[in-house]
Structure formats: C-alpha cells, structure tokens
Amino acid sequence: MDIRNLKDRIASRVMCTLCMAVVGLAFLMAFGLFLKARPVLSLRGIFNVLFSVTWHPTQGHFGLASFIMGTLWVTGIAMLFAVPLSICTAVYISEYAHRRTRTLIRPVIDVLAGVSPVIYGVWGVIAIVPIVRDRLMPFLSSRFPFFPFASDNYTGYSALSAGIVLAVMISPVIISVTESVIREVPLGVREASLALGATKWQTVKHAVLKKAWPGIIAAVMLGLARAFGETIAVLMVAGCALGFVTKSIFDPAYPLPALIANTYGEMMSVPLYDAAIMLAAFILLAVTAAFNMVGWRILLRIEKEGFSDG
Amino acid sequence: MSLSAFVTVAVLFWLLVTVFAKGLPALNLDMLTKTPRGGYYIGKEGGILNAILGSLSLGVGATALALLVSLPVVLYLHVYLKKLSKRAFIVRFFLDVLWGIPSIVYGAFGFTLMAFFGVRASLLAGTITVAFLIMPIMTRSMDEAFKMIPFELQEACFALGSTRLETAVRVVLRQARAGIVTAVLIAFGRGIGDAASVLFTAGFTDSLPYSLFKPVATLPLAIFFQLGTPFPEVQQRGYASAVVLTVIILAISIAARVFSKKYLKHIER
Image (tube, rainbow over all chains, first blue to last red; front, side):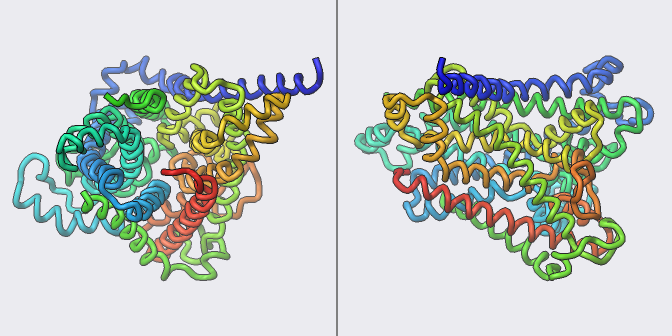
C-alpha cells in the first residue's frame, strides 16, 4: 500500500474517532452528571426530591419542587409572549415582506441571537424591571387581585420580568427556524391555492402553515428548551427568593438553572449538596435534550425529505 | 404581522440603547487599561482590563480547541461519508442536540470533570468547558457552509486520482475558507459572551491572566458580579463591561456577516 493511501486511511480513522467522540460527549455528560447525582437519589428517592418543597441543604432536605415550579412559571410566561410574536414575525418575513425589508430584518434577528445572555440580563435590570415595578404591577395587581396577578412582591424582580427577557432571548431561535421551515414549503403549494382564488392570507393559513406546522412545533420546542435552561439573564431579573413557591406572575421565581449558578460556591461544604445540584443539572440536561431530540428529528426529516407537493 | 416584526427590530434597538446609555458614560481610558483596585467586588477604583484580556484569551483558546475537533468532523461528514448516510445523520443529530443543551449544564459537567481530575477553577478548565460548549455550534455552522460547495468538485478530484484526504485538504477546505471563518467567528462570539459555563470553571480574579492554572476574569462575569454590588462606583465598571462586551460581539457578528456574504454571493435565497 502506498503512502498516500496510508495517510488517507489514518486520517479516516482519526476523523471517525472524533465523530464518535462528539456523539460520546452527549452520553458522557448525561452519565457523569447522573453518577454525581446518584447519592441524593439513593438516599431520598426520586419522588421525594422532585415533589418536595423543603430545601434545607444543611439538614439534608433537597426538595426541588419550588425550583421546578419557578422554571415552569418563567418558561411558561416566556412562551406565551414569544410564540405568537415569533411565528407572526417569521410568516411576515417569509411571505409578506418586501425583499429589501427582509434583508434588513434578518441581520437584526441574527444579532439578537448572538447577543450575550448577560447583556439581556443588564437590559432586564435597567429597562424591564422598573416597568414591571412601576407600571404593570401596581396596575394589574390592584385591579385584578386574584390568581395570576395577586402578589406582595413590589421589587419588580419577578417571574414576569424574567419571562419577558426570556421571550426576547428565545424569539430569534423560533423565528429563524420557523422561517426556514416555511421557506421549505414548495412554491407550487402557494400557486395552487392562489390559482383557486384564495387570498394571500387564506393561502398562508390553509396552505403554507398547514404544510409547515410540524416544523413550527419543532421550532417552538427548540425555543422552549432554550428558555428552560437559560441561566444568567434569569438569575439577574427573576428575584430568586429561597423558600418560596411562585404563585403569581409578580412573585419572585427561582428556576433550576439559577439555583445551580447561585450555589456553586457553597455546594462542596455540605454533604450531598453537590449531588442535589448535579441532579438539578441532570434534570435540565434530560429535559432540554428530550425537547431538542424531538424538535431536531422533525426538522432533519423535513430537510432530508422536503415537503411533498400534494 | 408587520407589527410583530417591527417589535422584534425595535427590541434590539431598545436593548442596545439602554446598554450604551448606561455604559458609555462609565467608559474611559482608565476603565480599559487598569485592573480593579481593592477587589472587584468592593474596590471603587480601577478598570476592567483583567476581564477584557481574560475573556479574549479564554475565547481564543476555546475557539482554537473547538476548531481542532470540528474541522475534521465536518470534513469527515462531507468527504468521507455519503450524503444521506445513517452515520452522518446521527452525528448531525447529536451535534444539534448538544447545541441545545444549556450552558449551565456544560458548566456543571466541566465542574464534575475538574473534580475528577483534581483541577481547580482556572483558565485551562474554563477554556476546555467553553470549547465543549461552542464545538457543536462551530461544527454545525461549518457544516451548513460546506453544503454549499458543489459535489462535482469532489468528483473531479476523485476522477483525477486523488485520495479522499487530498480532496478534503486541498480542494474542499480551500473552497470553504469563508464559511470556516464565519463559523469560527460565530463560535467565538458565543464563547466570549457566555457566563454560565465559566461561572464554575474559570472563577474570577482581579489580576491579569498569566497562567493556565490560575483563575481568570471574564467580561460576562464582570458584568454579573459588579452589577450585583451595592456600590454605584463598582456598578459603573459593570456597565462599562457591558458596553465592551456588546461592542466585541457586534463587531464579530458584522465580520461574520461580511464573510458569509462572500460565499453566499451567487446563491439565491
């Protein structure tokens, strides 16, 4: 065998190993975190940890329920804002906007996607928190003193603030994925609909979106996973009060990622504390990986097979 | 619908205006050329040079490490594997999933690795963790760029008798130069801006980065820590860091745009 083929063979092996290492990294992460989290699971049991609200690391109580609730609140609020806004924007860019408008909006969305999470946090602290504190909270909480609005947290650092900041952070993801899915819908679908006398909006609603909806669901799932795991920005604006279960959009929330980020300094000093934190990280990994897997499966299939014309 | 698009655009400008309005007054020469005096958390004088240099060295190191992995992976996907092969599908799928994993999880994972190898929070640990974080991003955006290269070029190479490695290195790499630069820039921007992954692994310090095994200051954490203090003078340093970080990231994304234009010039979008 000559030297050139030998080089080729060696390179092939090396590259293949690296590819497997990439796939392996995902498993290694899950395995490593799970291994670290196991002590707390074997001592307390999975149900106790997931559904108890008692969080007293020094006494050995590691109930994650209030943090899970915090995550759900913040993510839920973010999705409520981000999903309609992003889908409308994506439809506008891909179906309605003039070419020139499109080339103006796309870079803006790219930049929004690239801005550092901390900067979003700074923006949240400077701009969003005061608005929530001075305008939204007095207005809504006094006028509608019932379930999602009633609260006695007047700082502005709340689930709502975090939700708004998160909504802005995840919109670029949902917009760009939705847009690329809509662009995959063949032109023939639109032409057929228009030829039957449908208006532009009818075409979009009954032909384009109908074809694209699995991809849009996937986009929303990717956005959801992003929101679920976002840390620093949320930590800066969500209030993060310990021993508190969020019951209102104006209450402080303490999501899982913020818990991990906040406790890294002290977790080695208390037994099992680090295991509980690693369990939180493992939960985050499992949930985001699950959403990503479903989302990307749909998207990769669309990319591979495309939409049929029929 | 045009309203929602307008809202999206307006939010970006709102974001930039707030950050710059708060940060520009805080920015001066001392801020950029001095390290914080008397501790980053309480000291009221000095600047953020430690964080600027720390972030840059960490970002460059992590990007270089990530490039070492992602370049061979992308070449393997495109030159060695068939277009619709099962293996390529699986690798892409896992890259996408890794991309979606939150950075705090990478931080926690890096922390368990550090505990395993007995390394303290340091430039080295931070660099490796951030490299893990940005590797999928870099690989996937390179992958998209490589898809633009016509397959006929490779066929021509094979027909002339070159091996797959020669095709990959001499032809495909050269064609994809602009795409590679774009991917590297995107990954660098993501790496330099991320706070959650370096929180555990890189630590924070007042001094300039001088050793791989010592903690290093980073801009995102400089913002995060210094805004959390009760002292207005220290908060000023946080706002100034926010402007510096935003400018770096904007510059990178503009540069990435310029390079990606280069190879998208002839493609109808």
